[in-house]
Length: 248
Image (cartoon, rainbow, N blue to C red):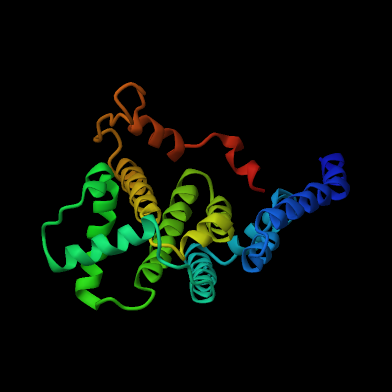
């Protein structure tokens, strides 16, 4: 292990510098994106800093740890949506227009929406808040931030249940610092909602199986996958003995 650390210490900055150069060329003229992506941690940084950071958070206890992680995530995502404003165009404009149409009437006629039903699902969700709060500035982006917090909480609870508290901390931190996820918060799109729903489903099934083992029948992932959600939940609820060693 010491050899690996020494090797990464000397070699790690090289791919980091190459990636920064490539990103700078790809985002020519977009200084905000370049500064943000270059400032995000890479594998080299995570390997050295994540274990002591997760241990420090773990000493706080589960509740305090979750509160602090949620606060950090909220501040970072809120700063991003206030600092970076993205013009509403393309598919993002379709989501926004359909949501406003659903707010005013129950029935719409749009062939593009008929081809892509997920647009109707997210637009219906967004139209509820538009009808309740009105077309406030940055309303979709603020909703994205709260959905991000829900997803981070689900990741924290799932990894804590499957492995350990340190694993939950690592998952929440990686979710908070993920560049693409942070950038998505500035857009009007369905990914934050559906990601939160999927992880929420796994969270419900995991805790239901823990409280009443054996009651929940097999739930296949797909028609041909042969997956068994109950068996997957049981495996993760009782992880192997070496699961904790991957975080320490």
